[in-house]
Length: 376
Image (cartoon, rainbow, N blue to C red; front, side):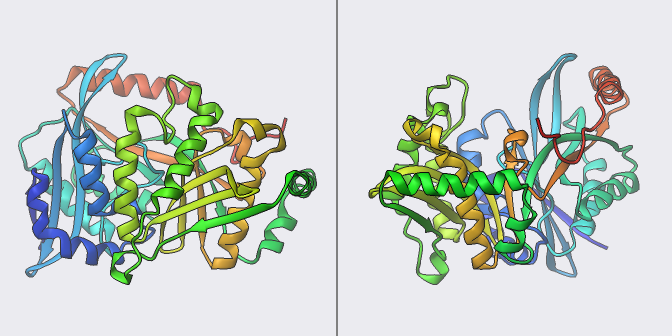
């Protein structure tokens, strides 16, 4: 039998820090977003209006898993609904319970939720990796708790599986892309002295936690000069709506050994950047950009290819290019991964049931697309 203790105050989680860190080290396919360090930063910037529900699962006096959740109000076509979900908020691709046995943690957590006073209209576990055991485990855990689970696609992400060597990978890419890549390298060299810099500190535990604000500021300035910097609705590094959050998250990531910062240099000056998070061989592409004056020469795409090549050399196992712009990533990706959500709509909440019907109709009208976007 498992015991579940619920925490609703972030400050109270301090007593769980050691157990959280230990469990994170044993969590399959974990990321920086699963860390307490990231949750603390996220909550300080975006926690207003949300309710924190972190479920700590123990057995025989030992913590065996942690299930971070939040309740947030979301506007939908059928009106405002209270959604109980993971706290990722689309900052990453995948999320789930922390610990070596995510299925057991999720089952215990859901049993606790159904026995607790309900503060939600829709229970929706988003950001589920369709290619991992999480998909089946999530469905089974919800059904075991008496929660009918409706499966729909939340989004899709492009990933590069870093198996084999760079030469193997390059040979598997379309001939046209390979030719363009070589041509872009030649053109870049014609412009001046080209360099590639990758900064990946080991973290505070290893005595290597310098955030290198000079490098981060260079990325931010490139973001400001890129086409994203002129967007009024964008969320690149330089946008005021998220700038402070990203800077605080960068400092936390440096302490955790989770920063992966890439710069393309031209005559000693930054020309393009790819800012990522790194965790145990897995790279997540958070933001990227380039000097708009170099856009016609493909600086951004060239840097991304260099980062993938360097990841092969470092022995990384996966590079998640992130959601959005999938057509532009199709030549780099080895596969497109659907990201699932599992939803339970409370039977006695009218808006929840209307939302369920709306989703059902949408799914029938808009089936999941092909594994890889067709070439134009």
